[in-house]
Picture 1 (cartoon, rainbow, N blue to C red):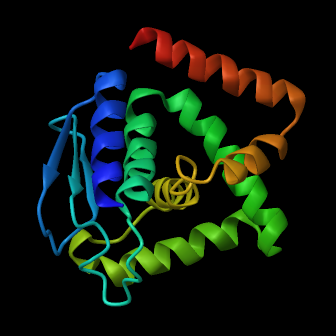
Picture 2: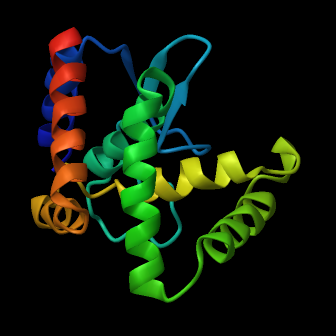
Length: 169
């Protein structure tokens, strides 16, 4: 429900001390993290501009996606840990190598956003990880599955980094 998505997102960004702006009926994006301004934009009608929209509220998955991009900028070590978890999980679940996953994503990005020029491995990893994290706030089972897919030492490191990041806020 849109109202819950709005309320949840506003509260989350306030708690994190992150900058947020809601926009209405944006046909270019559901959400975007602007690095230069350190602000995340979320479309209140996220998903409704997509041709095959199913009526599902996309605010929370969009927030998860954009928070991942923000994490990449503000906590690169945490992002690297998430990248390893996501890419390792995708290699296991798809049977594709890391290089194949990255190459496919570069091709997808180049086709979807030709105005941005050629995309890099860094761009591809950023989007792969952000898309994989879209359901983490809404789907705690997926978060648990991803978390359990790494070793106990990696789990401990990830939890410690998240705690540290939260304490800094």
